[in-house]
Amino acid sequence: MQRHPLIVAVSLGLFAGAATSSALAETSPLEQQLKDLESFQVIAHRGASGHAPESTLGAYELAHEWDVDYLELDVQITSDGELVVFHDDAIDRTSDGEGAINDYTLEELKALDTGTWFNEENPESADAAFEGTQMLTLDELFERFGHDARYYIETKSPQLNPGLEEALVAMLEEHNMIESGRVLVQSFEQESLLKVHELNDKVPLIQLVWYYPSEKEDGRLVEWTGVTPGPEEITDEDFQAVADYSVGLGTNFIYEGEEVIDADFIQQANANGLPVHVYTINETDEMERLMEMGVNGLFTNYPDRLLELVE
Image (cartoon, rainbow, N blue to C red; front, side, top):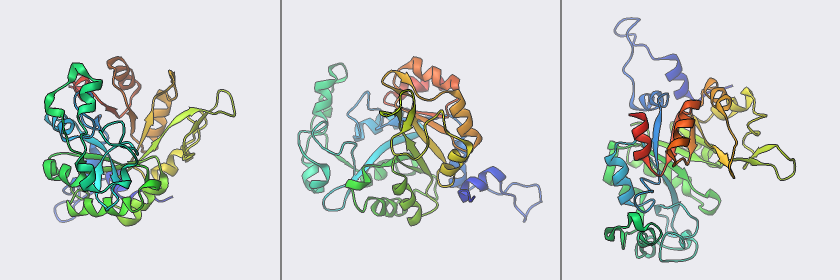
């Protein structure tokens, strides 16, 4: 079974022959990024999206100011082939437009207001400065933070965004985000992750999973895309199959009030080389519980709350 070459390099260590046989070689930025995944990661979900409109520069500015480990985002592709930072397939919820996002050109999307909705839904956090906020492009995000941030990027709805992986990898290479250890690419769609690896096998990947009760068998948990069995049935071999191409696993913790993973799941994933990052945790008590269970990182809309627990 062939493991991701970067995982092998980190786990075995690299030794310099030019100095002494015991001297460690200089660690590359990409190797250091993977090593850092052994530590707890604070992942700002769509930026500090509990405090500012999600997926906007304001939300990412705040998260970056707080020194989170990763800025988390979704990328989609416009009708004229531009990459935008946006979660929903439709623009209705978080803008003053309507319809499918990839039916619009970038110019048309830039004319939308993606901030006023936040003020209307979150009056306690409302800010007049959010009104008229433009949709953000991936290029703009990279231009703003460059190599001073790390990015946790989801290939969103790849079946609706043909050409997304090619455009994303080209953008990552253009901004030197891969070998500089600045990016993780995540997806629920295994095929999308494998396509990214075909384009550039150095990109570190995160397999997302979603566990929920089977509609056919009472009490049995299943995974949304079938990429793994349910948590109660998952084996070392199942985790190893994911670890062949992925450097970590992103999972839900609760489905409709019921916990779907436990400490044993986390420990078993870790034993098979997969850090576990749980999404999306906003309440302090749940953050504390998951940290006690040994989770390796949390996605949250409120990174300030999580940072208070880890500092």
